[in-house]
Image (cartoon, rainbow, N blue to C red):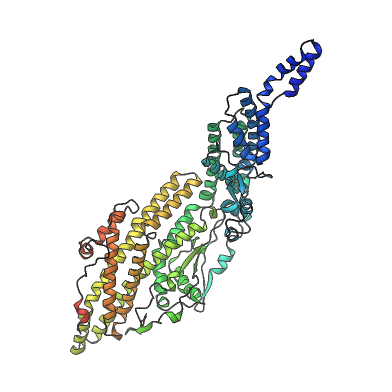
Length: 629
């Protein structure tokens, strides 16, 4: 810093060797310290009084460097240089080895538990979040919740973006240098799934001979994930900064950005290449976004009769496993290694109890087939416990860095919405097929009996307007399903794939995937309460209509059907009016919404009935046949 003792020694030697005025010589020799020592004393007093240390001390010294006294400025710059040496040592430990060396809490990167202790655990659910992560994998805990930026120790001349890059680089290095044991040695990858794949269905043992997933790399070690040459490159960048006589903000930021790019690139290789990210994204699209339409069509058909009954609190999940496994046997190929990661779940049914929902009656047809129909179609059956069907996807390290619980919950939200939509579409088709089959059977049996044949013809005439209503429902549901599956999901999937091909940065990839999920939710209107409520109501009305139609022989009263028709007209008109509003149709949140509206209103039917006014509905043509006997 300074050489005051050498200056005093020089004055002493001068006084001993020459007979000169003592006071004048001492004053002249120590004159330069009069402008340095008093400000330094004030600085020390302030530091001790306010307990200033670490990043706060760097920030204070950086401010005091800007003064008009060259000697004092040089002195404080030297002090700041020594402070930066400590910071560079901490940065090297963090960004080269992923180790946080900060015994006295002076670095601006802190462990999460340190913040919880200081702030009295301001996040009471933090321990719960930590518990949800694998206890065998501390790297996941460190990545999601382990470290944070401590703003009190962040010097003001280091931008927040740079601090976030330092935090990310250190966490990435920790991940790369500490791959978990299961990732390095995957000799026994899925023993429990292979055991679970053998299920007893109706007394038969059904085994899925799926192959084991190929181990990613049985000899993988941390040095291979982060080559020593790359670590040396990072260390050399920090060493160049450390050896510089002054702190240059631009050089510091460029070095941090370069280090972050190295860490992000190797983390990208780990997740995308070694862990087969794209294969898992495709699997999530197949099962959570219903891209495997044949599987879910088969599953809904197999479980159709079961879903006509209220779910039983204790056995609902086990009941669903039978049609789920049957559908897998029929549609899933043996080389689909990702299906083993998918499991069906039925969350707690909450307040949905059998006593709250009327048990549907089972109606037998002449061909021996049967279909369950509700005894009271006005019951809350369309949004019953079966709409809580959930899928879970097993994600291993390091994909848990990418597929967080928040991400998987978004996939689940879209899945439940699409499954309700597909279930509604299937019921509309099945109801038409079932009643037409019954009608043709009756006609074949009684074609020689004119009276009964005439009665059958009268019944067909009486319910013909209902089939027009059913076609309106099916038309709306089909177009909505096509819009979501093709215009939204497929288009956004292609965008995501192009980003994956072009990017080699893990952070960019995470952001692209978040944009992908946000686009799916927003363009499917799941984030617009008014629209999602109307869509749920429409699907509910469609299911009630189907159950009433199939139960037409047991009741001649069409009041309930008229009520359902009227409510459907109102809801569909309201939906069209909201979607065609300039706030939605004219915005960029749903770029393909105009195509959907064009398909809906290709003959101006919706526009004529809705009249373009929200909640002001012009009734569609009446159904006189409903009241004719």
